[in-house]
Length: 224
Image (tube, rainbow, N blue to C red; front, side):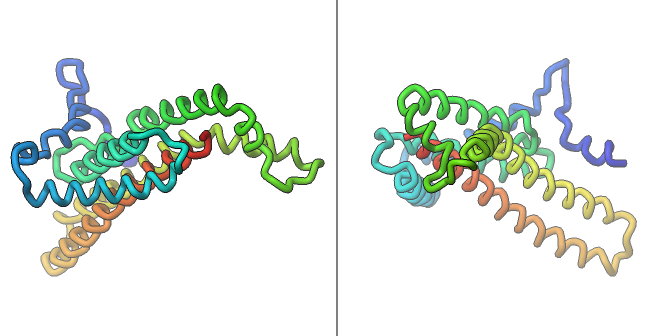
């Protein structure tokens, strides 16, 4: 049963190609044509969100960040957000629930941060392995602990996003499968529960996008 349950997340292959991975680009088609032509409510909301994110990410990065540094993390947030929200739409493939996508986002970011930090700020990176005030006898253990915590960062970023997205989808599928087998008196209660759960999942989709982008910003600020 578990194999059949998780099979809803398997990429389907047509003509030997997993074409449903194209769904990760569906956010590009969500932008209306008028966004590029005239001012509208969507553009105003989009500007408010991006300006707010720019202010927060600029504070996290600090003065050492280059101009336009926050654009990378704003784009990352919007990309994950579109995939999370469209994944709640029926018959739309949820790419963000797969480690193949989330690890592809987190691992290159982490590797680039590490390469930049060790090349340009090697002394700072070494000092970061031993927190201030650590007793001398504990320094080797702290170096080991900090190294391990640093290495697993891309994995924790990827697993956090994928696990949160797949958990809500599984619960929605489990509740949806109960519809044909329950009485009509309980059907209205099931529908209300699913609507509330869908609302919760929409909030989780937004929060997880924000958390992923904020943590990536924090990891970037540590190497400057």
